[in-house]
Image 1 (cartoon, rainbow, N blue to C red):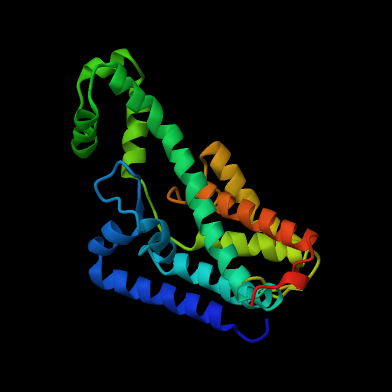
Image 2 (cartoon, rainbow, N blue to C red):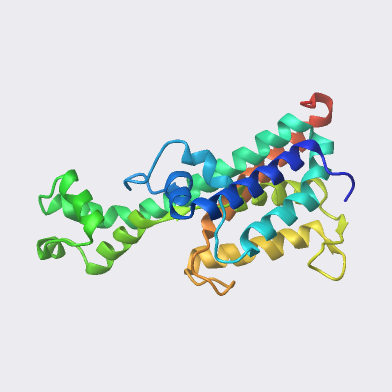
Amino acid sequence: MGRITETVKVLLITNVIFFLGSLTLEGAAFRLFAFWFPYNDNFYFWQIITYMFMHSHEGISHILFNMLLLFMLGSSLEDVIGQKRFLFLYFSAGFGALGLQLLFYYFKFQPGYQAFLEAGFVKSEILEFMRTGQYSSLVLQYTAEGNINEMYRAYLSHMVGASGAVSGIIAAFGIMYWNRPLQLLFIPFPIKAKYLMAFYFIPDLIGGITGQSLYGTTNIAHWAHIGGAIIGFVTMWYWKKNSFNDKRWY
């Protein structure tokens, strides 16, 4: 790790300000700035950006881990690719994370929603069910109760955290410095960037596929991490393949 760049510094400070502000505002901050499932009454369009700066209040580990990784890897990457490319990478990974996780939520939501439509319910009636959790047994003629429960959980789902954007940074760093040994604060020995990628992303891939988290908690958006990593991987692979140093964005 060398000096901290201004862009990384601003991102760190913004995340901390959002975290401290949300501690003060409590539930109101999450209703306004977390990303909620689009059918939810709490959904607002600006949440596609603000969710990246919100973090869980269940301990400090969520924001601390994300900010440590951003601090340890971000500046080195920005020094090579330039500020504008770094910001493009960071926010693109955040959007990619949101997109893949939202696709997963829709996959869980759609069977139950379609069953309500087939049972003759209109959209306003379905939304009323999702607000109250109460529904007519008629819909069970068209789908299993499990699908209704999955639909309801998707409706209540929300996303917070810079993890998707940071996943993009990790993947991009790994592509850029595949065999570079890293001395990370939370690992007592040097580890190559490619092994950091595997250590970080394989548990998410397993968790996303099986639904069983290896981290011991159930509220991790595994597909968001994978989505951010895919964007970071593909973007840096393309830039590296096309000699981005000759076309650096300052």
